[in-house]
Length: 101
Image 1 (cartoon, rainbow, N blue to C red):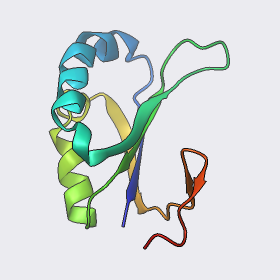
Image 2 (image 1 turned 90 degrees about the vertical axis):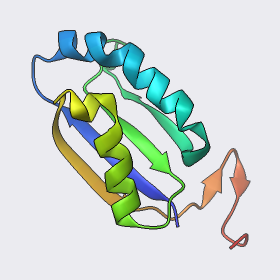
Image 3 (image 1 turned 60 degrees about the vertical axis):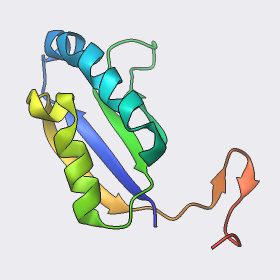
């Protein structure tokens, strides 16, 4: 069952996000097979990331927790809050996936 991880950056930590970003992107690339989708939450103007959303292909909450705790953004103390919840894949890439399982 997929898991959703939503992160919220600490206020005024944009410089930290930028400093950690290269290592974070390397981490995502190294773990790309675990990612169904991933990206930053940005402002309406397309600027200023304030957190992120990860859709993970892992079996347990513990695996989702371990994944996010290994992320350089987490290790670098960028996040103010992290929410983890199971996610039911209904449509992905424009395709109904409800009958696949």
